[in-house]
Length: 134
Image 1 (spheres, helix red, strand yellow):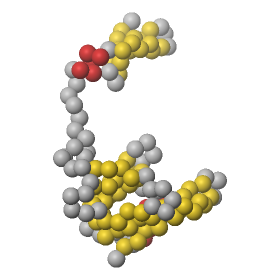
Image 2 (cartoon, helix red, strand yellow):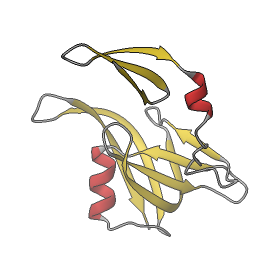
Image 3 (tube, helix red, strand yellow):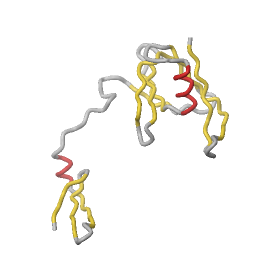
Image 4 (cartoon, one colour):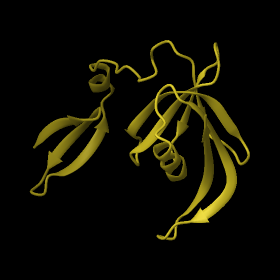
């Protein structure tokens, strides 16, 4: 019977099928070094979840690819001097319009939640967003 550490948990390997049991091991976690956050550079940031009719306008500072559980984009938008940088999760309707307009860092960008729902060919529903630029 052996032990190994997986994500801060002490894991005991038992039996022929190597079934795992876990017990909390805080000291394993404490032995690791902290990981810097991508936005841990002194910048004020604010995540936006645009409600129907809400919009954000500003300079597109960065597009991060393959973020989160679903590999989505994150748009980093500066709305004004001294204002927190806004972070907006990409959605299919936002991403298509940004790609079509060939927008990138430095572009003036506006994103609005239209509140309109649509259904995909796969039967999923989504919310339509409108993207505008200069």
